[in-house]
Amino acid sequence: MSTAAAEHVDSNDEEHEHPSDAKYMQIAAILAFVTALEVGTYFVEMPGAVLIPLLMVMMVYKFFYVAAWFMHLRFDSPLFTKFFVTGLVLATVVYGILLTIFEFWHKG
Image 1: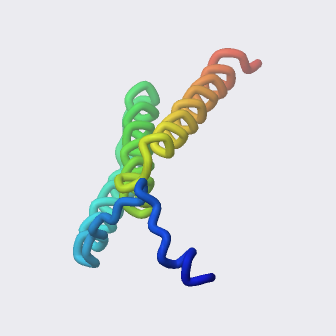
Image 2: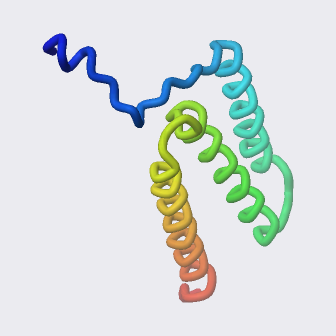
């Protein structure tokens, strides 16, 4: 890289302070706890009408935490967050449609 390119700083680039290692460990502990809750649903008898929405909420929560902290979306352009949210909404809708098809349109 030339020195002129190295000295050029885009006015749109804003430096932000990265979270500490302790913060990342805290986020990892939260994600591990939510994952343990998800696994724990296997051992608790509950109807599918409660289980599936509960698992979906935990899935979305974990997705946002991972995307926001480990993929640094909290510090990036809001456009990237919109892309991820759009993808999550689309995936959730497709998953809901497939669940509906398998629940209501199967033979037997």
